[in-house]
Amino acid sequence: MKHLKKVWLLLCAALMIVFIAACAGSGTGGGQEAGSDSGSSGGSSDSGGGSDEGSSEGEIELRMSWWGSQTRHDMTEEIITMYEEQNPNVTINTEFSGFDGYFERMAAQASGGNLPDIMQQNFGEYVNQYAAEGLLADLGPFIEDGTINLEGVDDTVIESGQVNGTQVGIPTGTNAMMVAYNPKHFEGTDVEMPSNDWTWQEYLDITSGISEATGHYGVSYTEPDNFFEYYLREKGESLFNEDGTGLGYENDQLLADYFSMMKQQIDNGVSPDYSVVDQIQGLEDELITRGETSIHIKNWSNQFQTLQQTAGTPLEIAMLPGKNNDQGMFQKPSMLWSIGENSKHKKQAADFINFYTNTVEVFEVIGGDRGVPIKPDVREALRENGLSEAQEKIFDYLDVVAENSSAPDTNFPPSASEVLQALKDTDEMVMYGEMTPEEGAKHFRDEAESILSEQ
Image (cartoon, rainbow, N blue to C red; front, top):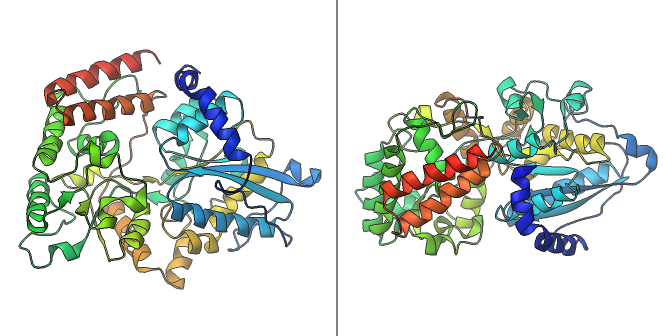
C-alpha cells in the first residue's frame, strides 16, 4: 500500500484525531438517526429492497461519507432520512466535508481498516488508487443478484465504475466539464458570449473583452488537473500512456504553451491569481456567484445548479473551447458510490445505493447535483414531472455533450493523484513567476516520471 502510506505517514496521527472528534457526535457532520415505517427502499417500481446478513441482527448502523457544498450536504441528509424511514432498523451516520481534505481523511481511515460502509469516490485517480489497494468491495455480485438494479443503464456507464474488470463503484450520475457564464454581463457590450464551438483564440478574445467591458475578471482561474487533461485531449493527446506507466504526451511544448496562456490571463488581469483562488470557500463562494467574473471554467455540470442558485441570476452553459472540442469533451461519472471492503453490512450498503439509483424522489431532492441519473426510466420520470430551470439546462447540456464527445480516459495509474498534485504545484510556481513555462513543463515531467517509476 505504498502510495497511501506516503500520505498516512504524514497525516494519519493528526487526521485520526480530527476524524474521531468529528464522529463523536452527529451535529456538524450530519448523522441523523431516523426511522419509522417498514419495508425497504421506495420510489420507483425498480427500487430494491432487502436487507443483508445484518438484518437478522436487528439494528444496523452504516457510515456514509461524501464531499460537496452545503447545499449537497442538506439534500443528501434529506435523502438519507427518506431511506431510514423506509428501513427503520437502519441508521446511517454521516461524515461530509468539502473536497479539500476529503481524501486525506479517507487515507487515515483506510490505514486503520475503518473506511465508511458507503463512500463517495472520485472517478479516475482516486478510485483506481483505492481499488488497486483492495480497499473497495466488488459490487458485481450485488448487481447479479438484483440488490442493485441497473436494468437499462448504458454499458459504458456501468463500465466507468470498473477497475481492471471489477465493479468497485456505481455512478451517481453522468457529468461533463462545462463553461458557465452570466449573460447579463454581456448585455450592452459588443463582446460575444461563449458558444459550443468557440476556438481558443475566441476564448482569449472573449474573456479579455468582457473583462475590459465590465472592469472585473473575465474568467475564473482553472487549476490544471482537469483543464490540462482536456487541453491535451482536444489536441489528440492524453495525460497518461495506455498502461499508466508514464505520461501520454511526448512534446513538453504542449504544457509550456498551456502555462503561457494561463499566465497571460493572470498577468493581464483577466483571471485571478492563486492568492484570490486560495481564498474561495467552496462552491457557493465562487467568483461567478459573487458577480466578480463573467465566465466560469472550473467545475462540472452537476455543480451548475448550486452555482445558479447561489448567484441568484440565470446562468448559461457552453462546452469548453477548442477547434476539436468534440474530441476533448467527455462524459464521466459525476462521482461513484463505493462500499468499503471492511464493511460488515455490504448488502445493506448496496441496498442504499440501489435506493439512490432507482428512486425518482431521490432525484427530485438532489436534482442534477450528482449528475444526470443513469437510469433511463428515472430521467424520463423527472422530465415528465417537470425539471427546474437549472436542471433543464443540465439535462440539455448533457444531451449536447453526448453527441459531441469521445470516451473518457480511464488509464489513471494508482499514483495519479500524486502526479496531479505535482502538476498543480508546478502550475502555482509558474503562475507566481518562480519558473518559466518551459522550465515548469520540464519540471513537471521530471516529477511525474519519478512518481510513476515508484509504482
